Every structure is written in structure tokens, then in C-alpha cells.
Picture 1: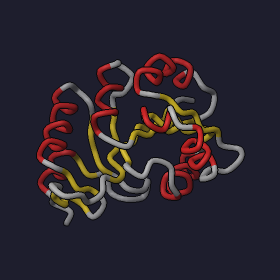
Picture 2: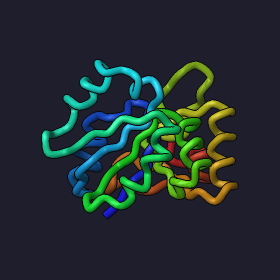
Picture 3: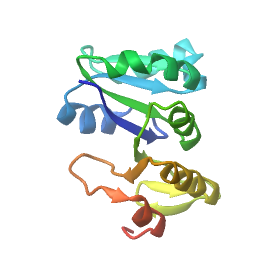
Picture 4: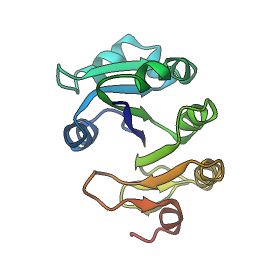
Length: 161
């Protein structure tokens, strides 16, 4: 199989990822790409506690993830790659390893505007998403596999509110 889902979710590993996506997609591993978490053993242990024992979790910085992607793309099991922000996903796109991006959860912060019930974006983040799409990446938002896949133009218009 391969990496089935490249997801931006600021909560990283949580129930919606493990159960909501992991079970329907029959996920065997998660690749968590975050420079801070990759350097922190205790944060890695916290995230490991959120997955069942049969599911592997791999932690990488963005640069290390690019180098490791051939291994994950050749995996016999299905996987999910997670980043906590658009900028990290952009680094993976620039490294040539990502062509489809799922926005799963970018939550409220000062300066962000609600676009979907689970997506809040600043003007800079909207520009980052547009840049991904301009470079040929399919960008859409979907919180769970059974939910409607919201295209980037619909997301930026906030048409689902």
C-alpha cells in the first residue's frame, strides 16, 4: 500500500485521526512530521499513547521526513502522514513527496477567520493554501471520511458555515 492521507491537523494524533480515519482506511502506521515533537522524547511518548499497539508511529522533522518518504511510500501497510500546520506541509510539498492535502483541523486563534466549523484561517494561511494549489497540489478539507470533501475554493469562501 502506501501513505493514504496527507493531513494538516493542529491536534496531530487524536481520536478523530486514529479511529475516524485509521479504522476505515485500515491504517497500520502514522508518520507525524513536526520539528518540535521530533526532538522531544516525552511528547513522542504522549502521542504514542493515543494509538493502538498494532499501529506504528514514526516521528520526523520536515527535512528527515522528506528523506524517509520512499520507505513509507513502499510500505505494505497503509499510512497517514500528519503535520500540525500548513508551513510544514509546504516543506514536504517542496520536497516532492505530497500531491494531495487534506485539511482536517485548524482551530481558532486570534487573527483567524472561521471557514468551516473545524477550519479557521488567517489571511497568510489562506495565501499558503492558494500557493499549494497553484503548484498543482489538490487541497481540500474533510474532517472524517464520510463527510463531504470541501474544495479549496469552497473552503476559502466559507460556503459550508
